[in-house]
Length: 375
Image (cartoon, rainbow, N blue to C red; front, top):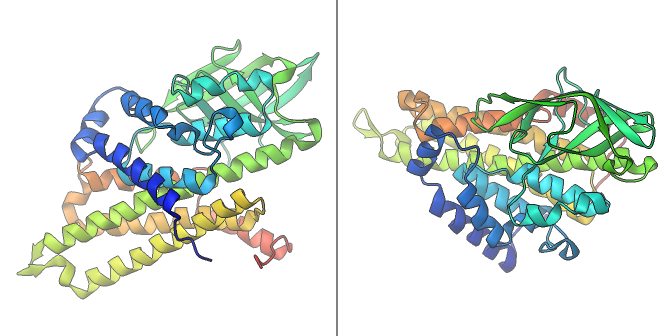
C-alpha cells in the first residue's frame, strides 16, 4: 500500500513542523519542564489560530473536514518535538462530540476549536481492564444517570473543563460527558514518568442528566470501541515521531562522537543496532498509517489497530533503549534531550495496552476469524 503524502498533506505537515519547531527547541523544552505550567498555552493558541485543533472535524462543526491520517501528521510532529500540548485528548473528545454528540455536547465545540476549553478523555482503569469493557458503572437514575468508579492516568484531567468518560451500563459500555466540578467527582493529581500532567478521577454517585450519554442505547458500545481504537492509533502515530527523532539524534551523536580514535558511528555493532532501530521505526510508521487509513476509509480491522499499538509499544521500547545505550553515560542524564524521548516513548507504549495485551488481542482476532484481507 502506498502511503506517499499528497501535496496537501505535505503542506499540512510542513506547517505543523514550522509552528512546533519555533516553540520547542531543546532550551524551550528544558525551561518548560522546570516550570509549573501544564501545557504551552501560547503554542496552543497558535495552533488554534492556524485551524490545527479542528483538523479531523467536519466542516459543519467548524473543522477542516480531514481525517485520522492528517491528524496523525500533526501528532507525529508533536512526538518529534515533544511539544507539551493536550492534542490527543482534545482531538478525541472533539471527534466524539462531532460524530455522536447531541446539542448539549456540541456547545463545547466552539470553545475547543478556539483553544479556550480543554476536554479530557477518561478511559484507563486499574487492574488490566479491557478499555472497551470498563469496570466503572453508570446506572439509570430517574431520567438521568449515576456514575461510580475510578479512572486513572487521565491526561490533563485537572485542566479539563469537561470529561469524556467511559462506563458500563445495563446495555453495555457507553460514553458520557461530565462537567468539571460535578458533585461527587474528586480529581487528584498523579505524577507521570513522562512529565505529562495526569489525574485520578473518583466518581462517587455523580449524577448526570439524561442527555449526558452519547448515542442511542443499542449503539453506545460501538462508540466506546471506536473511541478506544482511535485513541490507540493516535498514540501509535505520536510514537512514530518520538522514536524517529530519538533515532535521528542518536545518528547525529554517533557520527560526531570520537571513540578509540574514530567516530562511534563507524563501528559495526553501532551501525547494526541503529539499522535495527530504523527497521522498527518504519514498521511503526507503516502499521500506524494503515490503521489510520482504515479509520478514514470506514473499514477498521481491530487486529490491525492492535498491531499498530503493539509496534508502538515494542518498537518504541527498542528504539529508545538503543538511543539511550548508544549515547552512553550522557543518555542517563535526565536533563539531556534523549532521556526525555525515552520517558515519553515508555509512557506512550504502555498507555491503553502495552505489547503483551496487544499481542493477545491480535492472536484472539486471528484465532476467531475476525480478520480479513484488505483486497
